[in-house]
Length: 222
Image (cartoon, rainbow, N blue to C red; front, side, top):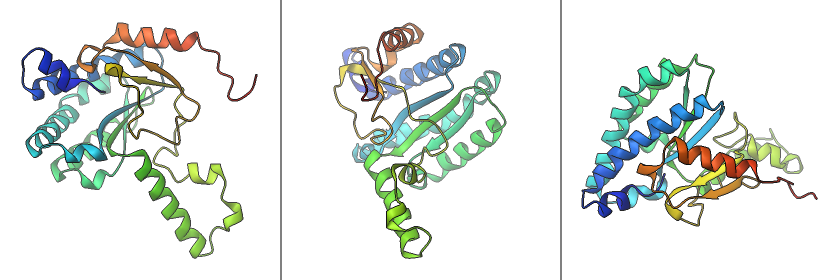
């Protein structure tokens, strides 16, 4: 969800205003995804690299995150959304971890859209952690090196319970994946839009889905 800062700068507003309006886009896109019958939606909310941003901006983002998780429970419940999170959750402030746990618990029985929020997430970090877990099992004799397959590695990723994404949407015209789901997007279709995240709403989502529908996915075949 890229472009909050540029959206604010273009309007001569502080960066946190871009994050505030960006949260409105989250609400709109989650609602639209449910209406369109999408079963899984992963939003890249905060990367491991984002910890390097100015402390006041990080603190503001964490406050917005906790506020969003609390204020959106009713909306998410109404739309039968189940909430999950991936990343180094332990690095988040305690008040965010607490609110995240409460919101997940409140929505745990829902069976509509599964909303996965990537928080303190990095694709390389995820793979390294998976390799460490497998290495520990090899050392303890639970797994033989020859038994390590792509499936085994995938079963140790944060996303082990969900299918790989079919479509990756990159907002604000950025032509890079930014350390996002590096293993999982190996066969995902990419749609890059110049739209900044605060302006990304249902019409832009439908446009990306229309573009995806025109693609012919061959998965290495002919």
